[in-house]
Length: 61
Image (cartoon, rainbow, N blue to C red; front, side, top):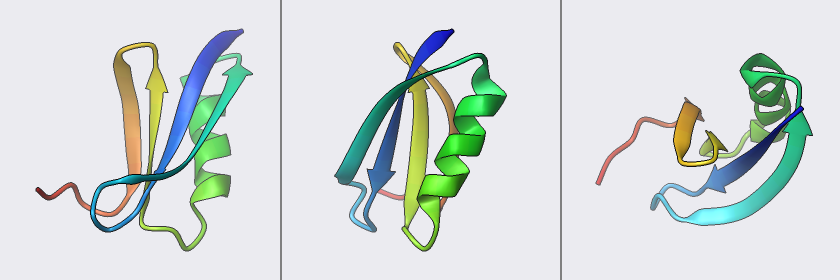
């Protein structure tokens, strides 16, 4: 099992919620993130310092 962090982002690119968990692989963590995303702006999945993927809104500064 690998440790992952899932960050829920608002439209201003700020973290509005965060969860940590252990998943067997990237795909399982992404599935959990997709369930969490729902109607929220975006979610990012991190494994340590590695960004696994971003789901939802396009990144803008």
